[in-house]
Image (cartoon, helix red, strand yellow):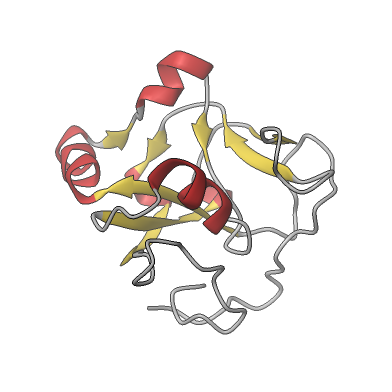
Length: 143
């Protein structure tokens, strides 16, 4: 678990469709099995890359939203902590889905996720009610 890097900020809900210079850490939800397979393949290529053309990422402050929408109650999830400066492909901040807070944009990586961009891997489990909580600002899993 790593501390918050100097100069890193969690983005607000608004922004443009390019990499934000002030956002160094992003996260990606996946299963332990998916990450294990990626580790052997040399890069992470989730189904969304073929289906939508990008890898879904989140800021640490918003990751609970897709976690609850897609994975409520699952206990086999991990967070890949991604250094946006190391991905080697465009990241665009784009709208999520209906039901997300108005104006909220999510980072989408338009290419595979290279293993060297993943700086940490941490467990990400729901509470006893199956609901994922927002990460605290001082969460030790943040970098």
